[in-house]
Amino acid sequence: MTTTLVTNIGSLVTNDPALGEGPLGLVEDAAVVMDGDRVTWVGPAAKAPAADAAYDAGGRALIPGFVDSHSHLVFAGDRTQEFNARMSGRSYTAGGIRTTVAATRSATDAQLEANLVRHLHEARRQGTTTFETKSGYGLTVEDEARALRIAAAHTDEVTYLGAHIVSPDYAEDPAAYVDLVTGEMLTACAPYARWVDVFCEKGAFDGDQARAILTAGKAAGLIPRIHANQLSFGPGVQLGVELGAASADHCTHLTDADVDALANSETVATLLPGAEFSTRAQWPDARRLLDAGATVALSTDCNPGSSYTSSMPFCIALAVRDMGMTPDEALWSATAGGARALRRTDIGALTPGARADLVLLDAPSHVHLAYRPGVPLVHAVWQRGERVV
Ligand SMILES: [Zn+2]
Image (cartoon, rainbow, N blue to C red; front, side):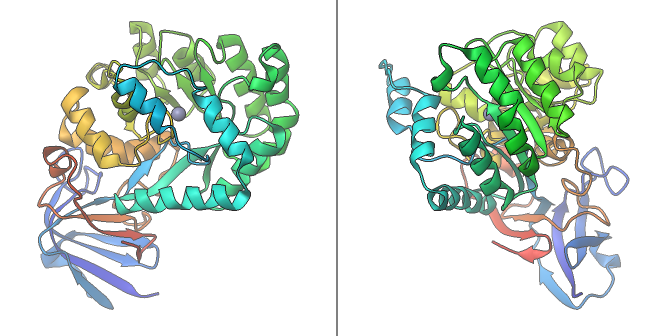
């Protein structure tokens, strides 16, 4: 293996309080050593060991690669007209998710994979080094399994979301669709997935249906996560906590009991401000969750309908501006928080032994991610020790 020393780092975020100042474990005038795909040393530049190669960071800030723990990237087509109508105050009667389902079903495998890869590269240029993605635009046994097979070729974090909406083919008999999702479709999809998910919401799946779907997924060896309390109050968050979900995602409409349940559990509250931005909806209250002691992650929810952004820096800026997070909290949630939501200990931090996923910012501090919104601040990205941007 070749060791590489990244030195002259103006400000380093390790996310390990034992290595530096505050919850982010900040180290000034720092260096990092990588060996192959791992970080092997972190500390003050003056004490750095020798390495085979060196990279001068020029005083820039270095942070862990972003962990985007919630996206929907296996799809075809887009929904520009729907977004334009919504933002222009015009009514629009196209099919929402159903529009994307139709486009996805009629796309070839190669088209779906090319679209996925295009979005992955787009996200990587913005500092994302780990992403989770879901099925949910096929809604047949074959189309869901194919979406997961395509996703699994590009990430380990694959989520079975046959229960995104009730398939239009089962509009008259939702119970039969739940039987399919918990039966034949699950059997076909489980080999490609690590996670099972359900959209628990009025008009999608109610609490009893969501419980049946997540319980069946667990029995098939998948770990639950849940789309919960996005558009209205409901049973999703507490169901997720009860079933040991790794994450409850959205968390926009929460009762005090929901907040308490999250704060007293291992279930991460994953907030997705791109969705509220793109639908002009009420922001989730990150401050309330953090003050209660819940673990908060930030993610893009990248999808062609309700949140068509792959940018974690954009989500950080929204979280700081509109959700009551400090810049430090938002950076932690977009890196270490995402790792927690995926139950990963090898990513989301720059500590000895961690995966060498590094993002160098064209800025002296990570605070610039919120301070300079919309500015392309990513200067370089290393993924598993390899320079990719
Ligand atoms: Zn989602």
